Image (cartoon, rainbow, N blue to C red; front, side, top):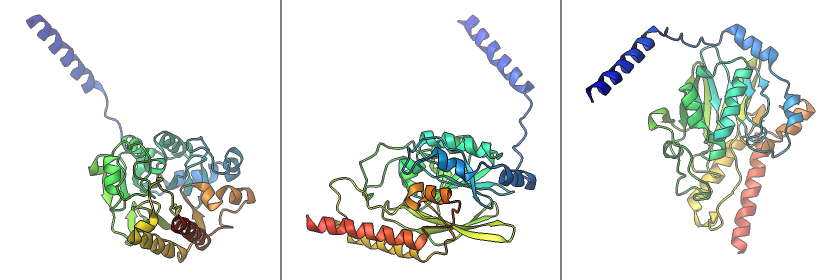
Length: 313
């Protein structure tokens, strides 16, 4: 018995000795101006994304990243958006995609010449697995904290959908993220992360905690307001009726109204095809076509159609 103890102690001491010989790893350098300039110059063409992807494509289908405007990039898959906003003091990611899609997101960030460890925060659109199911993987590989709505925060921290989500019970739980890495942000107040400023706009309806994000991205003096408008589709489980939840429907309408009035030079959405992104890229102008007002109008029409269908039953 004592011989085994002595042998185990020897192994432990050897491991400690070897660990002491390993040089400490240097911190990952922040992105310099040269790195940002190189990413702008060398990012793959948006046309490549449009060629590889189809409308309403598979959620985890790999796609190359491309630059949207300034230091804003699409780093998601063919079927699910993830947006990177890069800065000299750190980067911000919006949405992770699915658990498998998050691997594509991290790979695309590296492809652009950035270090994922320089992510300072991940912002969220809405609390469903296709858009935030990969947050655990992103956090594990980068340490980035998640900033989300008060309604979405407990969903992300537990992995379980809220009971007032119209799709409650439809999807398997997500892998939870330790609550210390999840922050709820006050609605309607801008947040500044590593010198990058974003405005969260509450647009509940598709989920209770849905957020739309607005920020400015510049190429020299050419600054554009970009809006990442959350999903507006009134999708639910079979036994859910929106008409049975008047306050929820009113909040849905109010969010659509807020979205319709936003300054919106470039419209992006969690599902690229919801804002005709592929068509815009094929045409060579991501700022053309559907804007926030048109997107909101379409969302309101679908809500009204859903309510009318429920009333007719």
